[in-house]
Length: 218
View 1 (cartoon, rainbow, N blue to C red):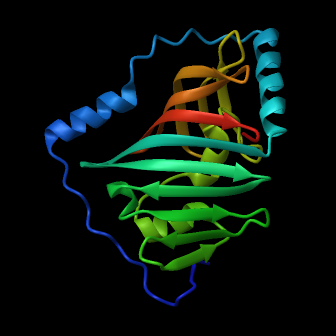
View 2: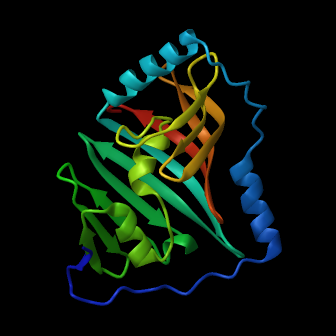
């Protein structure tokens, strides 16, 4: 159940109108200039490398990223800036830009509670972050899955299909109706972290270009 803390109705911000040149510019920024990813490797060595990477990242309860997002749904398109920080398991996501309908902060607590505070000061809370974001922003963003997928991990409570390369880096993940493809990685403290990814489901496409990663405390 989604609850408005102020008992106010959900606000739907006006949808932004993007000229064609701006859309092309955003697409180029999100696409980057990545080299082609290698072929999938089904060997036991590659699977073991993925598991080692997973165990290492799951042991880190503090991390941060800054990214640019592009969301297309049907004939509409939005972009946004995302700052995502995790401290001892608590997630705080700050979203700004047209896709954020003016922006806001989403907090995911250890007890499963999700709280979204808009830039205008309205507060909404629920136990389902995906439903909360869809209700307030009017767009389907798989927050619960992205807490894992953005790091190149599998959601532990959902069935999956997975392709990895010889180094154990994820190439493709299919979970919860979403298809996630990774096209670029960079080494962060010796760990390959995604910097370019695309999430697709039905007619929704979400692109993420991560400009900065931080693992552990600074």
